Figure (spheres, one colour):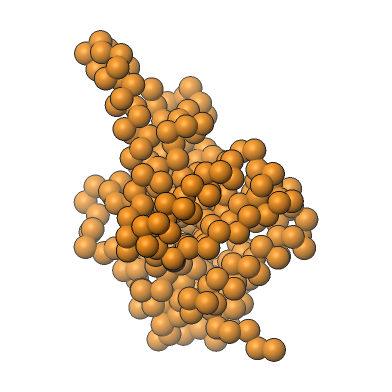
Length: 289
């Protein structure tokens, strides 16, 4: 475990020789005897880019509010048309697998990290939004030999412009099935790929009993269309789950990132809205006047 003055680097898993990290920020006054809530951040980048350092400032902000915070590193897919090298993700499913491993590692080590294993909220942006919502909806995609008796599921989720459906415009992230491998049956090949797309889609796994969720989306987003966020919200609440939908008419994609497209005051307003949601569900203490 490596540390600097503001965060610790912890290896939670080794996959194909790649050591995957958690960046952890502890709140002031933290002790190992604490049972604090945890907030886990998952970066975006189209499953092919990004790094956990992108969300360190977010981790520090919520550590200052009293939570133990983490930013997750997961294997990234190679560029389109390239084969996955050792240590890269062969597909989106491997990204889900790594995030499930991270959740299990955090929950298994709750006493070490001074946190409550039943109060772990997950926040994700874009592809990280997909991975965060997957941790509320999708079972499976578990690493070989992993102890699945420990839950990999989040207790609350914040989804910032995440992908929830791979059966439409995001189907390009799903490998094409070779018709030869399907016995020369083109229809079977198409249907096999479509089933794979459904398996990766949180929208296809909504059911009753899933955790509270805050869904945030910009109406100017042309990367992930806001209609997908609305469809997911409607399905999630129709199943009886608690959810809030916040649409921003003036924001585009990846609005939660500092030093990207959105001006800092707007990013801080978005973070304040997350704070309200997490405070409502007792992941953060009430702000004093």
